[in-house]
Image (tube, rainbow, N blue to C red):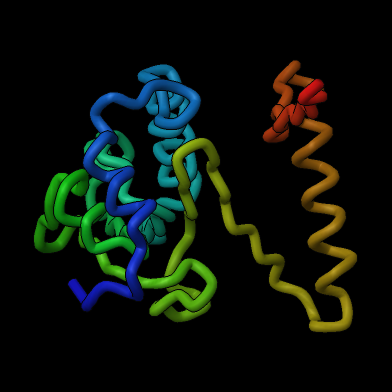
Length: 169
């Protein structure tokens, strides 16, 4: 584990209260089951590729999932307290936790096949095409994925926040 990145009192306190949190702040068993199935499906459809997963945050439930054999999980979080308090521990050859910034990842571009966070699954699909055709190919892939999800009646909710302004009078 590397040194803590800056002073993060909010996240340090968050770590101390993690056990009291419930959905949607942490994934439910159903969320974890869905995520586990998606990861397993990815591994099944890529039998020659090692599953290298990147976890944005230190969610213990995601770390403790049944990962396909030979998988590697790297978790990244800015708070050393998060790592100390809620990370279930590094396992040589299976998973590790590093402290760092999600926007300045200490990983190479091709180092992960699946990116996870508390409430998201991000499967990296990179078409093997000429550079000039990349945007069009990526757009077509995303469109077909969306069509397949709609055909299966799967909807993906977008995070929403309601803000109410109250008149103090």
